[in-house]
Picture 1 (cartoon, rainbow, N blue to C red):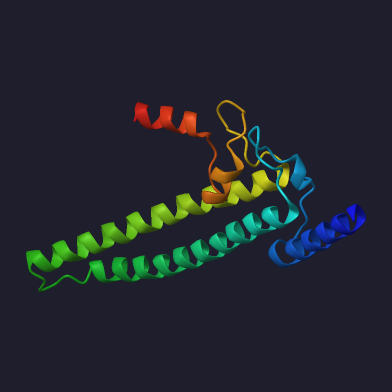
Picture 2 (spheres, one colour; picture 1 turned 135 degrees about the vertical axis):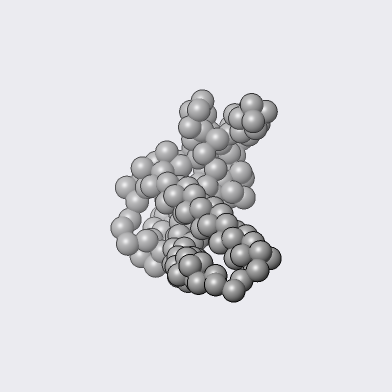
Length: 160
């Protein structure tokens, strides 16, 4: 029974890694941080987290590409304001600012997501970057880009 479970876990992990990431993680899923009382990470759970993060990276890169094209069009058209009234010029400025804000947010989220994938590969996924304690498996599953435990995140938010 134990041998079968181990073989099933290895098969599932191999399949998950092959379809979701170009290289296998050197870290054993059971070595990833969990809080006391939580079950260790399974290969399936790690594969699910990796799939979610990888999908998010692809989505964000596509979003940034689309946003870049939209911004290029807005910048190109911004010089062609002859005959525009103040309202048209204001609308163009607001649209450009909004597009820049969306692009900046997508870029920041992409960087966080790529960092989470790197932490997954290095074995530091699930460890708080401030105190070094486990963030908690449930929190990581709900928010895979988390880098702080609940306590340190609350402290950070209070400081503003």
